[in-house]
Image 1: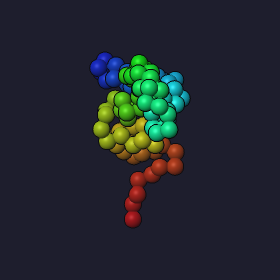
Image 2: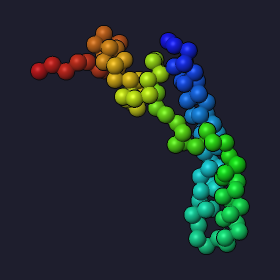
Image 3: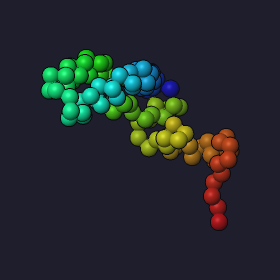
Length: 103
């Protein structure tokens, strides 16, 4: 596998770990921001705290990538592999419970 693709998988994994680590704080700050009963100053403080969290701790920065090739598109989320790798492994019978349809 290319170094660039390995790096993208490593970065994606680091983002996933950061997102999991800060998930509770992120949701808490968002809940405070959405609460209209709180005073504006308290909501602004929560906005600042939310902005101070690492950028990569947001779930929107996570990209589904193939764990074998690092391909960012055409990835089956359930298997975390690209359609190309999935088809190849399924044809070889390497995936349990998956077989090529024929009728």
